[in-house]
Image (tube, rainbow, N blue to C red):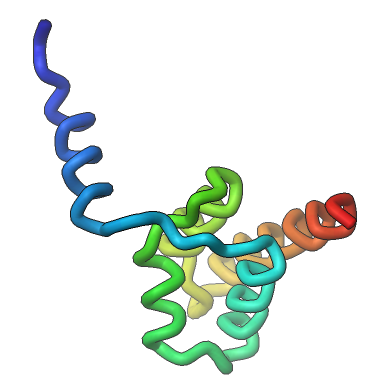
Length: 94
């Protein structure tokens, strides 16, 4: 069976990052809001975008945010859309 190098590197990268963080929807909403307001510290934001999240849907938001940042208008819109979706998700969880 041929080795898929991309999958192998991906699995190695996941192991090096350590265990996934247990973050709630509310936790992710809070950090995204702080980033948009400019009140998230550099370390806090780096921790958020660098550490995988156990919930696959929240981790998808983290990955998207990693590439977005909040400096560009288009990037802010991506984060704002993610926030709206997460707020809706949180409302339906209650």
